[in-house]
Image (cartoon, each protein chain N blue to C red):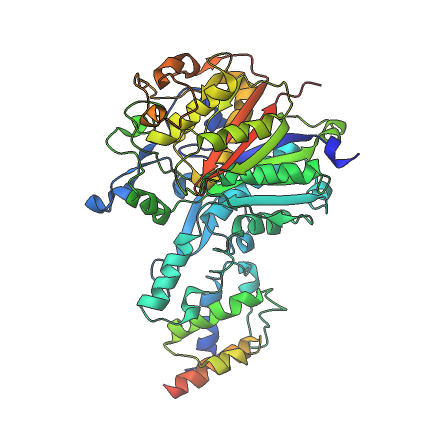
Length: 450
Length: 86
């Protein structure tokens, strides 16, 4: 079949989610409108040196892992023990925490997909998994022992490279499942999770692979947290469950969270032929750049171009838009107004799952894609928790002479933004994610209509 | 230091190397080969050497480590040689 006619199905999913024992627990808590955000003791222990102390996180003990600390390098987690016996010790030895999560997610996704060993280990099976951070928990103590304590390089052992390299998550998954196809990572800041899934979609769509394990990871890292804390972009001053409040007028930053989302993608006809359970069919993926030279500020024009690229000539109209919705002051308002500008003022709903678990950075796009698949399955819209009051006044940038978007304040679009989840016929969801550097990504996923 | 004491100490170190199966650690002799008998990944050899430096209170020369063989005997010789240098 010519590449351009190939369709891509989602046939499996898995991951590691804040405060949740597994995917089923994640599903239950999400659709109960619960917040998965807690006070983070690791941040709290630094007292006044850190602004924000809330996070969507999961501890090593909660995931059945136990760190083994080096007797040579102070503070260095030499390896991890999987107390539930899911990952062989040899694979754990080459993995940082995020890579272990990626392996957990991959095993769950493959099990759900029903791929046999031959399919999993095929030349036509790829692994495309990326991470936002850089293996800080491995690098910091290793570098500290060398540079500050003047110890020999060998003191940190021989696994700092494989446990901290950029594509460590993909490499560890590949070594575990023994696929023989493509193994790479895509990095695009907070669009990483969706970017990896989008790239995987293209590999199948254009005939390069038949199956791909794809997703994003953000392993627990105080180093990552304090980077954003220093920028003063993290939420502060609310109780944990009220800290992430996309679109609410009092929002003051995002909640830095950690987790992992992995999906199994497969060429549609092949998946149907073997009787696979189709969780969703990807209609299209598109990504672009703002092109305005601004590292941080979101671009209304860039996001409109993103929609144009995604929709093309399609008549498909989303029932739900799963927004990036970080709970940052400018990001949310630009995003809402660009969605309204493209789709109009009614006929769809906006879901902001970061309101429930915070911003998982490199994992965000993948975990939130999983929330879209769960919405398709449950036929329920996930809420925008804490979006209590929308700004009744125009945003400052809307008053600019250069503004070409909607002329109404955010409060005019209250009807689009549910504060509680609710049941709805959902056939199509568009997922949006953006990242530093002006990168934008969007994917459209539908129920299997055949 | 007796050679058997060194072997026992090495086995204690090997128990902390999780890429080596614990069941392979019974009956270790000087002839045991880390690579062929214990399936030790080559990248772990430097970890074993670094842990041996700590356990036996010695410091190996880089040249000695670079030329190190893969048997337990090679490690025992290296440790005793370094111990004698102290």
